[in-house]
Image 1 (cartoon, rainbow, N blue to C red):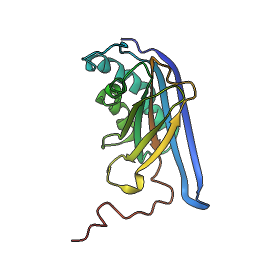
Image 2 (cartoon, helix red, strand yellow):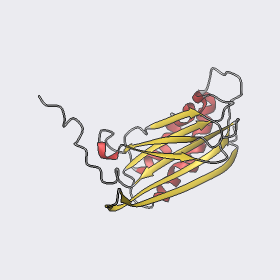
Image 3 (cartoon, helix red, strand yellow):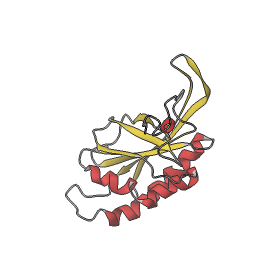
Length: 186
């Protein structure tokens, strides 16, 4: 099955100050995203896996390693998202991004071992999606729990899916929460 790509989006943010305070090192977040034609029919289809197994690796090849390259330094936290146009269903995006043929094409270049946290929803073009990020080696590392809001002004159209990978070079700027479980006293 041919992947029909309308556009590729690349974005890098670098943060130097948080709440008026300098951050120990510039906090960078990179996002590579793709807008594709929804490969599923507009009617209900029971078998989503067959198409996902064909599409997922192609999408992963286009944006997985590219996200890591855009960041330009070692990845510490990562995540993914799918925003499905209004003539599709959330399961269409989920079938693609929750497929190891997609995920491993991002996880491996990032050097990660944890599952990629994800967000998926249906929305009109220009809708925002909040991409959750967690530490690539230990999802319980609280300092790395963060969210980046992402949107593309003209996507997804009704029969499209916007798929994004996001990576950061560190945890939240100025993170200062206790480690996981520290608040539990015996």
